[in-house]
Amino acid sequence: MTEPREYERFDSPLAQRYASGQMCRLFSPAEKFRTWRRLWIALAEAQQELGLPITDEQVAQMRARRDDINFERAEALERQLRHDVMAHVHAFGEQCPAARPIIHLGATSCDVTDNADLVGLRDALDLLKGRLATVIERLARFAREHRALATLGFTHFQPAQLTTVGKRACLWLWDLVLDFEAVAGLRAGLRMRGIKGTTGTQASFLRLFEGDHAKVRRLEQRVAEKMGFAAVQPVTGQTYTRKVDSQILFALSGIAQSAHKFANDLRLLANLKEMEEPFEKSQVGSSAMAYKRNPMRSERMTGLARVLMALEPAAAATAAEQWLERTLDDSAARRIVLGEGFLAADAVLILYQNIAEGLVVYPRMIARRIAEELPFMATENILMAGVQTGGDRQTLHEAIRRHSHDAARRVRMEGGTNDLLSRLRADPAFAKVDIDAELDPARFIGRAPEQVDEFLAAHVRPLLDAHRDLLGARAEVNV
Image (cartoon, rainbow, N blue to C red):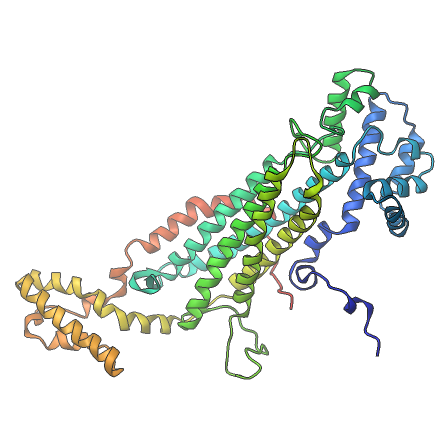
């Protein structure tokens, strides 16, 4: 039996299984080559507007065939020429014979490839902004709903003082707000490379315009505006500085760090049976152990986040490695790192949104764990109450120390329940203390509910109000 052709070659799991169709399209060959043609058209239009002898027929031919890319012909030409840009220049010229003499006029390859990359990065950052804003909005709902639900806090994954479920969610939220600010800042400051020529001097365009510097400046600005950019890089070599790529990958790595921390926290809480990710009715946790409810989404998030964090150093190394005006050792690395980085970030945020929309909380399990640990935490309050009713602080302290150690020994050595409160109630030294009143969890959560309210009002609500148009629909996770 012959296997279908698509099963005979490797395909990136990010594109095949995890990332959205939107993000995959942004980094697809078709989108890249369409953008190349848009740039050639914008260049020809701007050159015509500034007085170069380019005819309406030539521009019209290019516009008419912009999206009709002859892929097979371009691939054949690239095998012959060993140059992807020139292959597409010739392929486009064959479709637009009148325009053939002026396609790519005065330009170098990076006038096309780098600017096209920046168009793709811009659109991909826009998509991630929407994903981040949506996750923030969903998680903010969760934090508000559980603002006052007391839960055991952990330091070193050891029981510590109480917090609330909503306050803990705000820790996750703050990381995401910082990520949004980083992505939004990069997007707002993103500049087109511009029309700079072979080593960034614009010498070829200066010659086309017979030494008219003002026209060369206007040419660059007009092309940028036609491609949707307000500004261009002030100086470049042949390429725009790869520092831009490095900064973007650093922001994507930041998203991965936030998601990894959240997913790990959720996996720990799932083991404690206090919270868990959504689990579908027919979902299988294990092929052998039918009872299992494995945190599959959270585990996938940590795995994808780990991959994404590992891509950032490659972008940093590429930025550091560029020689003088340029070297081509960036090309293969960038083809992998930029696309895979955005697809991974996209996949991570789809998972994050899906989990945030279906987080399950088990208040009775949370209360049970509080009941197991609170007696030890409450001893300081009980001690103070004992002093206030006339007891001797040192005597009471010694009694609490002795009873605490005996109760802990019973739990650890005998597997019994924590009977510290029973011991204290039976001790005459605490006869005047209302021990039950000292065990109200609300006495131990401090300002956690108010901190949730204040944080959401000051940092989350303004962000969401300013970007309401970015909020997306419910997230569906791919297989």
